[in-house]
Image (cartoon, rainbow, N blue to C red; front, side):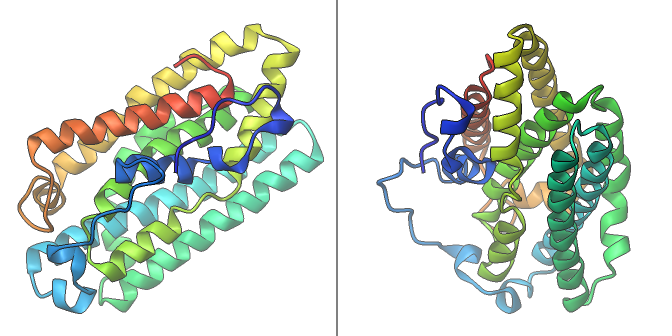
Length: 270
């Protein structure tokens, strides 16, 4: 689905500008009226069939481990950001979103256990990289925290949706479900646009912050993939109908396009 044009006021911002819908468009590379192609190869198989390939199984365990730790980190970050909230209502809203992230984490942890993997061991390889990303992009105030949650998390979600299109049907369904927007997108858009309307100077600072997040998020995703042989092999054609080099370029173009639309929804220059 296409992301709508930037609204004139925060109150008019439609729900369709949420990170998950922008990500859906980025992942498909299609316009809203075109039918997605039927899955082929591993994408047309269920988990039991696809997991017979040990290399594919290892790649999926890596992917679920990275996602699980990402959801756990998102829960921790949102709970921490709630302390910066200017009102009790805002604090409660962030706490609700943090709870949703933890529920996503529990689903991923449960799935890892169900396929015979130890969740902590699956998450451990990704902890240092993700923790480093969050240290390097720690927000200095409430608005930076909102932009990070909306822009940064959405970039990661777009990347995982691109990967999900090449997974077995059972894993793909789970990944897409845990990437569902928790309500942070519309909340962030409303609050950031209101802040810019009250003080237009805020827009320039937040635009620079969002550009930094874009660069850091893409670099972090590339490092995570490069450090895990099974995951990188899956992405670049070894298993699961991976990307060729040309498709990698198109994938990052789609992610960048979705990011530009989100910036417009926030009222920021990309």
